[in-house]
Length: 148
Image (cartoon, rainbow, N blue to C red; front, side):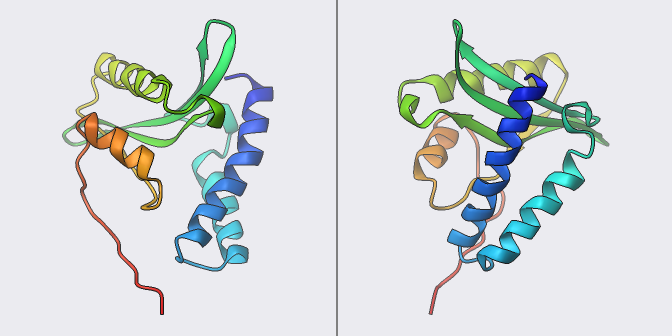
């Protein structure tokens, strides 16, 4: 990912993350926007140079089709990876690109000795949930809410 791609990603990602938080009912939009800003500042203090974080643009030939943000951290059981974000351009979804990106991430994690890959997904993102389950991801915890 280039600096220009990162700047574009960061602007849209914070907005989208905040909207997903608010849409989930976890908190009002204004609070979600502040949480998004703080989370990104904390996790990526040095942008693309933030230690342990890897942000890649995904291509099909010369066409940029999506991106992935992966963090790899050494833990007592060995390196663990966590996918903070993963995106395919909306008009290209349901064409196999998401699966291909996730397979590339898994291969990269194997090559770096990771013993697991974690990720979070909002409950309303049924397409992503289905893909992750098809690829062998298992639910490790689940939050639920009933709106009154």
